[in-house]
Figure 1 (cartoon, each protein chain N blue to C red):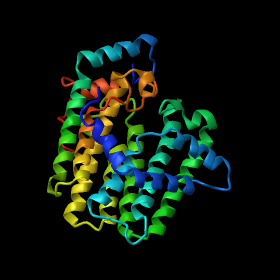
Figure 2 (figure 1 turned 60 degrees about the horizontal axis):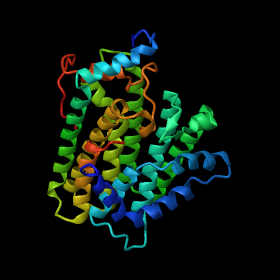
Figure 3 (figure 1 turned 135 degrees about the horizontal axis):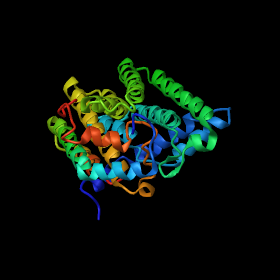
Figure 4 (figure 1 turned 180 degrees about the horizontal axis):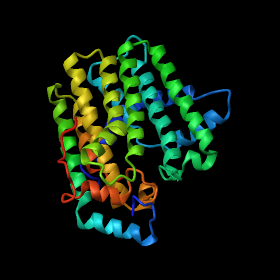
Length: 267
Length: 67
């Protein structure tokens, strides 16, 4: 039986299927390189699938704001691919940092190709993302996605520096998940609004939508790590690495009796 | 034990048991639903249309998904 909303996500993907097909073509085309290992490794992650939620958000936001690409351009598709590249680059780097062996139920890229290759191809994907941005030539879109990329890195560094620290507060935890996840959701939506030439009010509304969606998404992701069967989720439950998701820290953060600070609406 | 990085095999089960007893997962999922509600509210100023409805449904999905 499907859960509430599950049909909605599929319906969103179906509604944007044509745009997503073109987006996937752009992703494959833009990850090509004469250095064979780059498309080989990138294809491993792209082939593993995933929800493609972030590029879908860019496409949806652009369409919601009336972008009709009647000018023959495919700006929404190019920027959606750029968003996916930024996300994929962070996945490659995260799996190295976390020493993860699984990603989306398959062996992670670092498990197959090694840490050095994963880090360097992640760098390539970041660089490719910024090539797409400069080709699009919108300073607003560049500002949104480059700021989100910096926030992503900050979130990951913050997660690393708070690991094994049981005094980490709930607010700090929420800051980490905003940085590592919600910031890119927000940027994906806001960039779509810019492409759709929206009003400032609509642009802000879509940024807020994306930020809150990302917070909900990451909170559930963390909860699923401990509530779901490991094999079904395709991830590993760890407690020894000290990363943000260790169950003891998770308990400490979310235990109502142990909390020192109240949850706050961070977004 | 986390701070000392000296976990034993039985510690994982103990930690998961503690998570279950304190309803930490329930607290997290309720917080996720609060954020999902804020996401849905943010779309209120857009005119009703199919894609807005689908984005609202996506927000519901984000807080209720199982994988």
